[in-house]
Image (cartoon, rainbow, N blue to C red; front, side):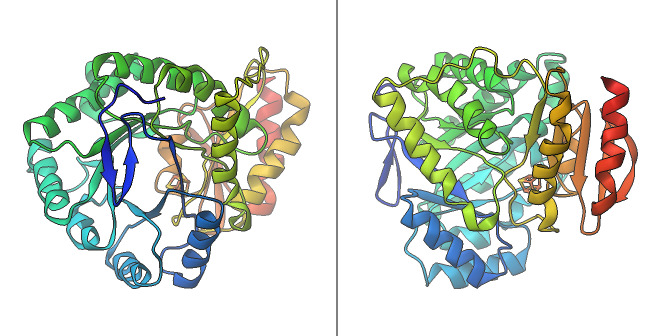
Length: 369
Ligand code: SF4
């Protein structure tokens, strides 16, 4: 597995070049809640996590991260989300940094993407950090979306390849890429295509917003079973919507799927994905209301009567990424601190209190089926 890619290093951990496929997860606690985050890190480590990602949005998150660094030996990865300018302050405290090419345009609009990436790379070089170029279906760089209008997967592949070329020019090789989508078939197409283009670059594999158990694991299996045996995928994350006390299951399922593939146990689900599809995010430090996970579970239960219909319902945990990530779904919900916004495709139906949103969703679902 992973035989063709080059080997990179994240504080002693080898990724790519034939190394064992590394399994990772991301904390869903509030980063500034140091005790909760440290205890989630410990639970993930106990389950065997090779890398643990933490989201950082602001200087207070960075302070919390710095404090945590002295209390855990876990390999930490930081997710810069929209605020790439935090790279400099987080770099001393982490082993790897993920930047999202689709978010670089939000800040310092007068600077080019090349300048911004050059700066991130200089920081990674100075602190010995590995990097991930993390491209996600819900936040593809606008110029690539415009260039490959209508072909979302192509835009993801081209955007990723473009950033690889940029890092090559900057003589930086200690990086991986990810090309994620919530649709496993698009993950397969995109990663196969990328791997043909750049067989040397290690890949972080994952189906984003795969959702609740067991569907989240099934969707992830569909993609991994088609890619891992081809040597595509050097590190994996299974992205599941779980309560914080169960987050370690992402590591459990990552290891289980890899073990099954190695033993030739493939799970055939020919009809999967033909009916109602519920996608939901794995939550992260941005979740503002813990009821998000409960709501996702209730949506699944309530909508079971419509399971034969080919429709997608998206349930997202925050108001930052939620609005964009629900645009493509037939019906979307994104969760704020006290209200949930209901959408029909990109059009807002209204905002509802948590306890009132299900009947409104059912009304919309009824009108679609
Ligand atoms: S949608 Fe929001 S809460 Fe959910 S994983 Fe993405 S950033 Fe985190």
